[in-house]
Image (tube, rainbow, N blue to C red):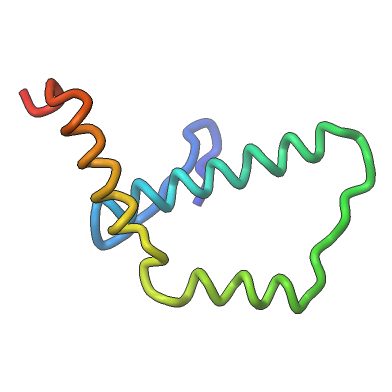
Length: 84
């Protein structure tokens, strides 16, 4: 969900899923804005490609928990100051 003058909002069962979902959403939006800024005709994906891509979003967490755990391991390795 995008809130006017506030930004993006997601609701997920875990903090990890929420973080990864919002990260990927903002990354996709940034890519779309950069593509539109080129002032050239954009090529639309075929309906088949859209369907295949949509299936990834309905197949569980999509690796969000694993990605979150990996980010936490990296943070703990690089800088534990967030814990205090």
